[in-house]
Length: 237
Image 1 (tube, helix red, strand yellow):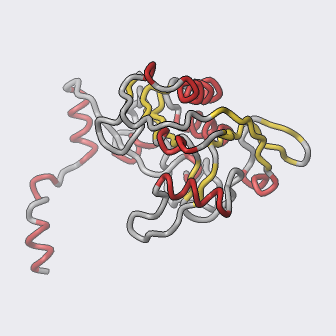
Image 2: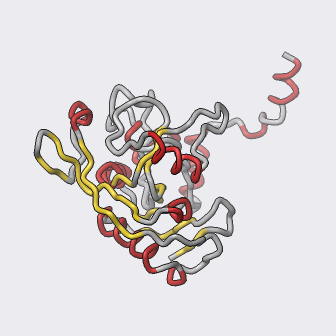
Image 3: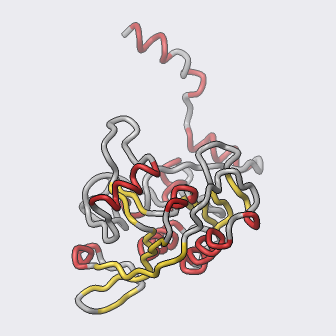
C-alpha cells in the first residue's frame, strides 16, 4: 500500500475523463497522436484467429478505445520490417529454419527483449504485409531494418502464396494459411554497410530497388527507411 501511495500520487494530476479531455482537444484544433502495438494479423476480428490478441489493434479502433468513437483517423503511419518476424504461435508462410534462419536472426538481433526467446524469422512477405496495409488503412509506411539484409547476396521476397495449386496475391482466410506455400521473387543484394547513409538516393541501387519493389507491391508510399537503430539512422523520402 505504501508503494502504491508513493508512486500513485505522482499520477493523480493526470487522472481524468479521457474522452472529455480529447473532445476538448479536438474542439481546440489540436492534433491527437495514437500509438499502437502488434500488427493487423493479431487483431481479434481481422487477424489470424485464434492466434490473436484479445482486443482490436487496427488503427480504426484507436478513437473507439480512447473514448472518442466519432473521430476519424486521417493519417496512419504503418510500420513494416524489411523482412518478416513473428512472436508466438500461428501460421507463418515464409518462416525460415536452420542455418538460414539463424543468420537472419543473429543479424537482426531477433530475440525477445525480456525473455531472450528467439523470434521466428523469414523473408519479406508482401502478401501478409499488403493485407496489413489495407486493414490498417495505412497512408504511408516506415520500412525498418533495411541494413540487416546487407549480408545477403540475393534477397528472396514472397510475392504470392500457392494454395492447393492456385497462385494468389491475396491474403487468404486464416483457415487456409496452413496450406499456403510462398512464391518468391529473388532480388539482388547490395552487400555493403548502409548504416551511414542519410539520403535515399545515396543508397546502393540494389537497396533502392528493393524498397521501390516493396512500395509498388504494397500500394502505399514508403516515406521512411531505417538503416540502423539510432534516431538519426532514419531516411526520410
